[in-house]
Length: 327
Image 1 (tube, one colour):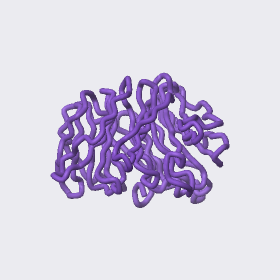
Image 2 (cartoon, one colour):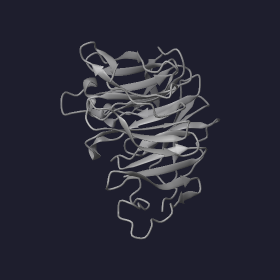
Image 3 (cartoon, rainbow, N blue to C red):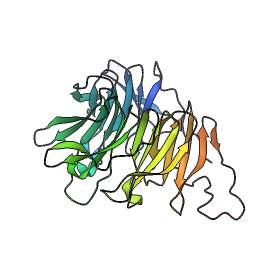
């Protein structure tokens, strides 16, 4: 039975758009329409307020923590067209260490690359552009490269897991994007032209309305590539690719009946959470035969158990509420 670990007033003056735990699960960053970010210590029974980050002039849509090997870094993106990378100072406060102000419209999504590939941040904007911000230790500075991904606007971005055991860096990563054109796209680093290029073959059509989120499945649990996407059409789609140059195709589609806003994998890739409607979350789990099944619904009141499996159902046919949470 799932239970609420902690519930507290984040003291924002407007709705909260995003909340992200750091690598160790000890600090929580909340992003709000009041233009602010608030940092909380959630390692104790009663969450403690640490600091407020003020640097945006519009609603803050998303925040993302970098891996702690790079220090205590937090990225934020906002309606004000800015991306800010914040660094924790010695006194515990966070200060801007880099500002990216080259987008021409709201920046809707941001995500850090896997730590083993370096310090890279991908951002997607309503101007249709995706920017990749990379920290260069040799110059102690950031550089940016951008490309047009979805002409109608980019709502969601994410990096793949490392694609192989070769040299770490952008050439060992793909980027997945979701846009207002209802498309999901995957991009690779072109070594010859030194720019991001769409992979071939491209994604087939799957959604009928704006794609709101995309998430690449952690690669430790499967040899195939898998991406989850969700959209305002109420659909959650799991896309699979058997080899790097093969066609992506849907392996599971779930109609939830209301707009789906976010999708998120567990750290092992064995569970997928999807948030939809006003306050609902659903969990999906992979069965032993490779199919995906909805295992439980969660809202503010707690867990809603699915109906029991029919008598005689095999292990892969009826999945109970998973033990151990999102592990």
